[in-house]
Length: 284
Image (cartoon, rainbow, N blue to C red; front, side, top):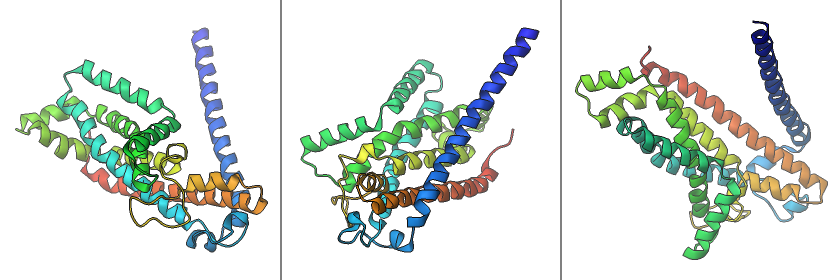
């Protein structure tokens, strides 16, 4: 008994220590961004595109990168959702009796999830070279959608795995088909978890720089079509931090603060929407 209590206390303190490290690291990152970025943050940074000499400390802002990040992330998340939702429902409704097939799919999804984003960027760049495609918003959307697709499918899959088998059996007993069970029962039951999966994927899409480094290009203008290059906030931060000018480096932290605020707003909005969809869930 003494050994078990000692083991329990050991793991308890390990969990507390790990949580404390994560919380402290997060707080340090936020404090660093606020301390260095808040003095450089202004309405001009948010509302204007870069002017001549912006990267030398002159006037302008990062509106092009903000709009470009939103365009890129929304497009990639939408494509990933169109593919990921049917796949996750296929795994947990239509293939529920074929465990070996489901486990194989999950293995490859986990493997794809672990591939660094720069590899997806290199893959997208290779496809661009062979297809003759130029760096553009469309190329970035396709590359990022491939990058976040395993994340979205596995997140939705974990939500669907927690649905009791009794709910599926009850749906079948009432005469529902597999498609009706998937899209009318499971979809409503897991709506909150699906929104969280979409948020997770969107956050990875808007915050990643490596996968778009070779595919989207960079421009000081807001794209008006899918064939034009586009700027993103992570790339804007990267280029600003590379500058030897102190004022421009401070603007990089301001851009990071803008990106953090965008993700925070989306997170809060998602939680509010999730509560509204909770009324469609069947309570057990």
